[in-house]
Length: 467
Image 1 (tube, one colour):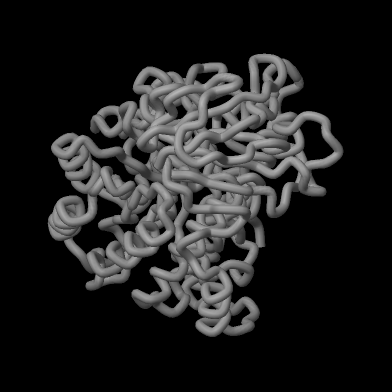
Image 2: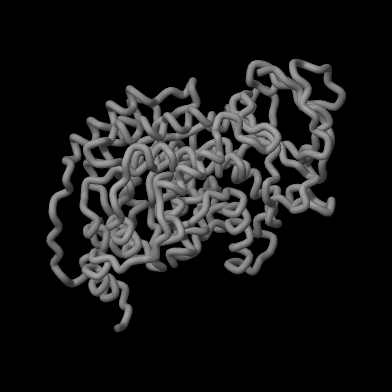
């Protein structure tokens, strides 16, 4: 894992410069022009070098439903998603493999997988995803999606009395499963990390959050969760707690610098102050928020308040893609219509920093990753600036973020190990992966879900929708 990238373009404070980058034992050892060759020479001419991005929130197994889900708000969309045929272990493996490849080929070197578990095969599900991520070589946070309340509990009851069946797995059993998974799969030295990840306040008891706090503190793990993705969840929090969801999680002690929170669309100014004080990270998922009509997260307000931000693709059935560059583009320019003061708008270079250093901060890895700096691990991406979608020669990062780059990733290293070379993922037969995904699926059209039909009238009443 010793190599020297020669004559490569990197961003400077106000422009760009051509330099050499030495890597020794997977660590950036030197950055300067005209360095002596260490190890293998890598030709960086007409290429841009950036730290790897973080896909800070996704659900890999949703790949099997992409393109087919109805145009519905989150609560009804989830009901439809739950009605699809259950996953099998091989599908979990293949979808994690596909998620890793798509993330790599759009500039990501780390993925946070809020992994959906197969009931009664929870550890096997995790093992399948871990196997895929290890094979590819991407840095992966496995964050099993856990809950202890049924789907219907996620919708406010309003003025009607709602009776919900008990969840099929008791809270303590879920926490015991998480402890067993931590002990088996948390291997940071191999690039596989474990995170505690209750799905959100809408489907989780305080006991589940508190159990996750204990486990994350015991093993020094990150915490992850959905937070206030929709207006309905904001209403539900007031109904359950008599305060905001952020205030309640703060009382529980769930929020700290190792906590990342997906979406955060419906927060108050007081909530924002709490997140800033606790140094928690907001994961911006603009594409799924738009597709599900959840709203636009006030990212510019978060930035001004000092809240750390990162980007996520979200699952491929609420986004229908795992193109991280697309999420970064939309997540940046979307906010030009939410704040008239253009001095607050996100520039391309700021977007790249959010996607890399912002992502690593949310995973407690900013001291090790996220920037081109001597002493940091070599999670690096080399972009081909001669590709048609990155021409003519103007601002390379501007083209990368604001354009529509396709097939521009030339090389990727994770921990100094090259896993993409000349635009090809080294450890994955992508043609075979395509064939497997094709053979294990069939052309379908959307279907009317019985569960959606049962929930729809109540949802429309709660959200004051007529008809």
